Length: 156
Image: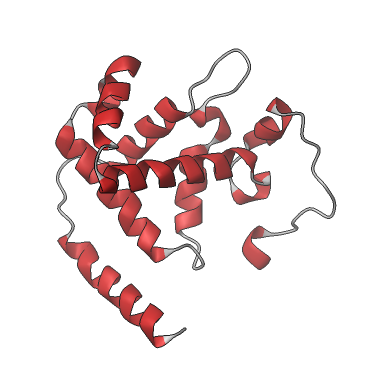
């Protein structure tokens, strides 16, 4: 690891205990956001069917996951909670309004971009990585995976 990368990582890890927390579960905010960004409809399964939250949690546990993204995802969920502490219980149109407001600042825009990125990754990844449950993402777009397929997670 390069010295610069090490210093950035060490700084971020040192800041994690100081991220404001409260009784909210930031994972519930992330789950509600995934459910809103990737809703179930007649042609496409929803975030829960793709196991997006499980995919993200599994990915974060991997040593290769970008540590800055962990901070960004959890901090963004906290900031969204601070805008509206009932976010996960709102109706779809109310969630849309809050997310549109949140994306007006750079932090919110970056957070939503990362949420979309990891959501799409979870929908279309090989199921061995925890997303794309029952290959439902591939089925939705008529994708046939190539060979060879991964035999294990993350270079195992």
